[in-house]
Image 1 (spheres, rainbow, N blue to C red):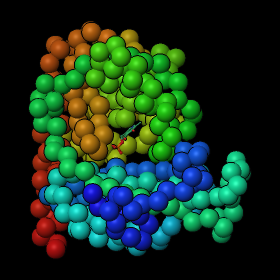
Image 2: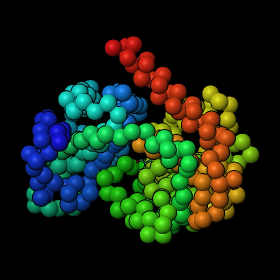
Image 3: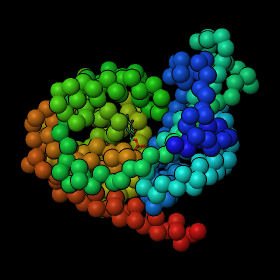
Length: 289
Ligand SMILES: Cc1ncc(COP(=O)(O)O)c(C=O)c1O
């Protein structure tokens, strides 16, 4: 498999990650996942905006200027040639010896970029049937707005849910629903859409940005305010969003049906609109080329 490793596109076996790479030792790094539809990056600008914003938050100097960064990702994607997939890339703060907790002087380290592309088709069957989730206590740190490669809190929550037989965890902090283990979380009540506001408790999702636009276009009122687990169990509909899962209906939580226990009307309208946006974006990009 071909991967991107800083300036080079190489076979994965050629990559050498130093033992003292701060990503490897401290989880000191950031990542992004961009959807590829018909060979094109979906919402690249927003993903790079978030990467740059997160890099500022952790005082990480990215290895390339933005135009060059984007160019390298595109060159890599062209070489790999996967038409429907997901691009994963991460940037660690780099190699710093000896191992010290202190942030190194940015002039003395170079951030390490790696990327790979995996085929991924749209999860249409699951979107039709919905998934079953369980509540898990959100015990992550208070920098959930940073797309950090340290995902231990998220993967422990997912594992807890899976151990109980659920497909994903709906995270709750002191009774307030924050998000899912790797997605933003939404509910529909009385035709209105609710989701947790951006801030330190959730990741500002790129799919969330798109859903804001879609909700507005469809005249669906969106309320970005915290809601409780009890309110969620009494909701009419529930779904999660992420670049990979897109809009994924959640039809039960802790074995309790949400609404009718089937994918709801508003969720279906949003799903349809999301598919149209994907198609339109791909077409517009093609006509620009
Ligand atoms: C914790 C968390 N929240 C939300 C999201 C959704 O983000 P996006 O829509 O940018 O994929 C993700 C995606 O990985 C995530 O890990």
